[in-house]
Image (cartoon, rainbow, N blue to C red):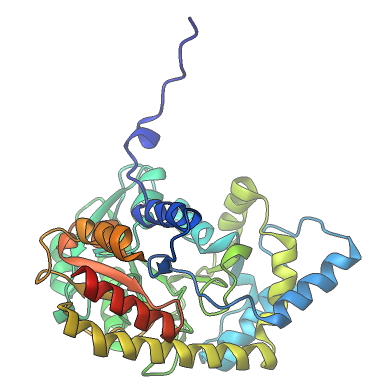
Length: 387
């Protein structure tokens, strides 16, 4: 009898990404003929902008689809440099911009470049679930900082100091954040980066929802500091989720080290996707993306207005991204059960808080407003009937 290869503890113990499993169940119900309203996955419902599609078609028609250098197309890095300079008032030289295979690769590169076995990273709870797994994949240790609406879901200086140890490597935060939509203010950035400098740590900021802000102008921590690692993506604001393209901005002196990691981990980002993304920064495309951002703002306002009448509590209005992190404690003691009930009985898919950490996760649902206002109204009607 042939023995089975032993599974690594990393593979055996990794938790599921609940939203993807929920999405699979939603698709199964959809295949069975049910009309599912998708409010679970973080993917804009709009198609890829036409200028980006046209750029990809022109490039592919030439047939010369080869590897780029591991750091990405020079033209694309230049375009991102100009984007930062004109839209964010940040001067980020192209040589510090690394094009990656999605923001996931950018996060993994940053963590891999900085983490030795046993190094600890401070993360917010709630927060993006994959960050914990990236750290553990590099033999690091994630340390959760419990955050609440009262502090705009951002860690306070006292929390950071209390959690810091001799093994601590740095702090990883997001602005706008998933799942809360919270932004980090300029004074908070100063505090966090100042603490990292004092304590000998590094600040990583996830800005993948950067363009999707609704009550203020989009900004970047790079306008304030050039010693932080910043992750960004073409998926959210630019609507290119399936193209799997992102970038990482590194401080001066880290470029070559991150390039070597990229060479080994994935060779280079998709060449067609990079050529397509060159059109993302054209005035035509930016104009369309700004129209879509305005629609997202209307959808947010709709849910913020209507959900409290159904028993959901929104303790802090999201300032960015496209999520409502709603408190469900008046409706249920188990948000996972509520998510399943909404899916199986109302055919509305929403993500339970368990995906984003342990802190009061059973009291929260994340609802993505990545569908039309008409569909959101229908979803509210269905949720009402389930409750």
